[in-house]
Image 1 (cartoon, rainbow, N blue to C red):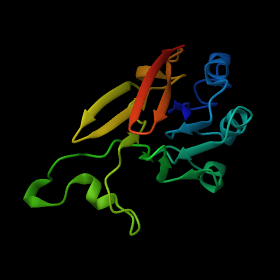
Image 2 (image 1 turned 30 degrees about the vertical axis):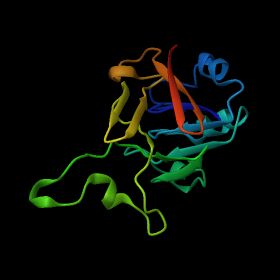
Image 3 (image 1 turned 90 degrees about the vertical axis):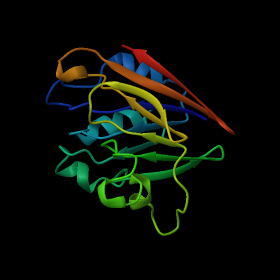
Length: 172
């Protein structure tokens, strides 16, 4: 499965609309995941012309964005035998002070008894691709507000096959 990833679009605050480059890079994807700070649901509507869209609620999302059925605090998706979480802020990982559980143990839903294979997040306005404790963490960056600067930034394409995930960061 080929998945388009983006985060932190902040539209229309930092830009009136999605850059055309996003649409071009995402052509042909099977799914689009937006990791929050959407601001305007028109962004999700525009992306949905390309492929189905799911989004995480960002810390700055308000109003209609919170009422949109595509937007949740956390999506848990099973893709090609892998579990993917879509959230806005990267969770802390490792042991917390005083022996509290690992970060992912506190986020598990009652039916979800395994840690994720992949975590897609936003919030940091920069790209991140790292493996920690057997989990692939991906922040696609922001296409419109990288490093909190009003310029073209990055999005990502995630290709998932059974037992394998490849990420391609695209500079717009």
